[in-house]
Image (tube, rainbow, N blue to C red; front, side, top):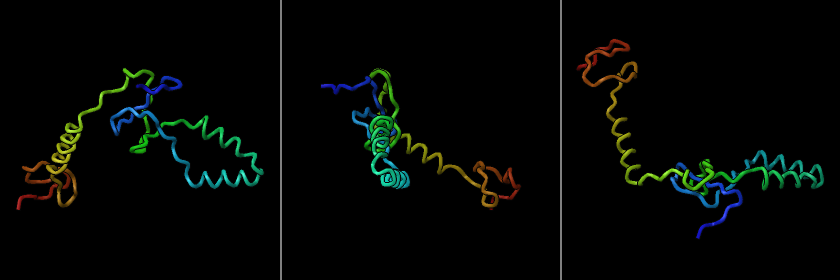
Amino acid sequence: MRVMRKHNKFAYCKNCEKEILKPKRKSIENMYINIWILAIISSLGFAIVPFLIYRYVILKRNICPNCQNQLSIYNSHEEIPDPKAQISRILQKIEDEKKEKSKVYCPYCKQEILKEVENCPSCGAYLIE
């Protein structure tokens, strides 16, 4: 059974690659909490009304409860991208790590170079031992 939403907006986390039914609000930082507490104490409680309006009306629910990433909001369910298979994500990460390990750097100037060069194109150092 599908959960009904107020504005027919759909939240999708690109990091988790799934639709989020109940997104969270971004947590308030300590500095802002201290400012609000000071404002409430100094105004004898009158600042609680704007705080509650800000917290529950203005501040949108757009944080993934799983990974705390920003959510993408879509107007229809068909717009939500299909999630990648987890195995393809793992294979892509392994491939990226292999590419990073295959890079060779000049020991003198730390510039990326090809494996088979004799002299560094950046600093001209002789590399073959």
